[in-house]
Image (tube, rainbow, N blue to C red; front, side, top):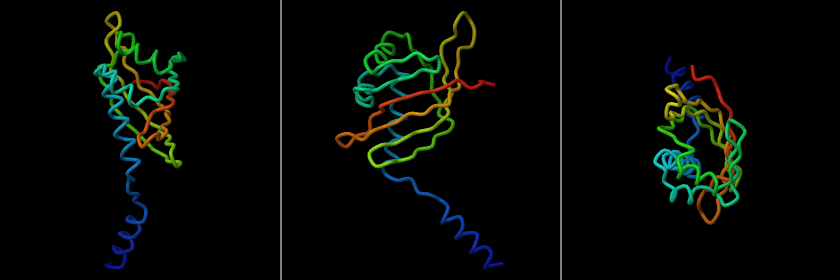
Length: 144
């Protein structure tokens, strides 16, 4: 029995992957970005979004960095909360790909629920020692 428990423990330890410093940094910058979207913090968004960022919304609309930040500032993109439900990060040197699922609570429209559940892919590039998002693309999932 002792040998079986030892083997099980070794199996578990060899298959548990520790999160690298870069993966932790990506998780942190994703959280900061989502928090800035909710709080309308353009300063944080200016830091975490690359100058050449392309943001493809789930409805097919496309923004660049300036137009997206403006949509946050003027309220045409409004988020009450963003809850990350899944997140997988893959690193390729100075590039990271994030695949995830998030639930976005938005203000009611004509008294109707306007929340979104999105499956998304975004990419970050490490420039001058910091991670910046260069692209986002998402599609809607059923909210039920």
